[in-house]
Length: 405
Image 1 (cartoon, rainbow, N blue to C red):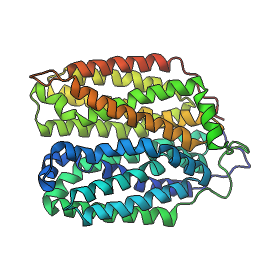
Image 2 (cartoon, helix red, strand yellow):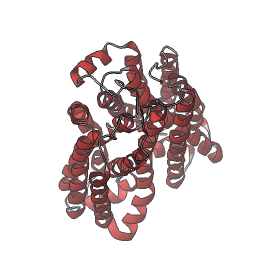
Image 3 (cartoon, one colour):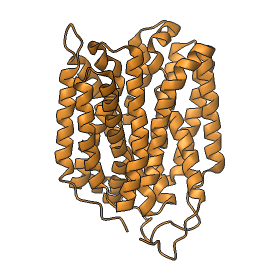
Image 4 (cartoon, rainbow, N blue to C red):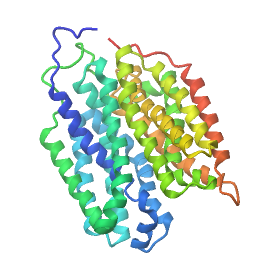
């Protein structure tokens, strides 16, 4: 469909998205920094593996506490102010954890500071898309914004072990702090709240106040179903990513092989976050492609549960990541569209917070359900497969978004 003549699109929208992606990716890199070097970090801090795990786990807890204030700021003052707040917190506390890396509790406090800033940044994905992009490009824009989160995680998995070995843990943290400052400055210097003219038909850019929008969302059946789907889907991603080594260890796979599996999951997710939203925008369908993603991830999850062949396991991980992570950006955009005129920041953050809650529940649940003796997580993975089928059934009950013109 052609864009109305009164509407003008600005190429600068891609640059705004790019500087947003830079700081958004850094939040995820800082979140998962210690996961690839848990044992080495425990030795450095002279503490336990669980204490190192808390450096990442605290992000989920803080997100739940900060999500609504962050959504209010995004929807009241716009994404530039909100992301600016998050970027400042990210830069300051990324530096302090590097400068005072020898003190575990200072690093832990710095992680909390970064975690407070996180929802201000990643909760703005659909707001950036709505401010700068026409409706037929918004799933693509949301997909690229979400892509930055996956790239941040992948970068941490690859770079952290290398930098920690070459420069030591403190040196690695200082480097990440400097890059975080650069990302914050870049965003502050180049991001703009909105173009001179709106990229959508007159009136489509207007949104109601946050509390009014929240009431509307929670009364809408399709959005409630979407919240449940995100609760399960993000919970599966967070828990499988956390326990990836424990999942494959009972079948005789090494730590490096588990790391390769986790890396392929993320590479698949990155490709999926690029490809699937493009098709979603091309065919003007949201619900259809969420359903395709849920169906597509199921065989990947089953393969990760049972395969003992390393090649087949890697293929399963790639398929699982491709379809699971591609559903996220399309789901964010679908939520923003079906709840119109409720504010995008509120819908985005509500969906994300479901994943933080379920991540905590699923992570502890999978640990509790490990088979005694062998440590096998087959039972947990079968339960996750069953929950995926529940998501597929719920998705068939969703109505297609009508905000597509």
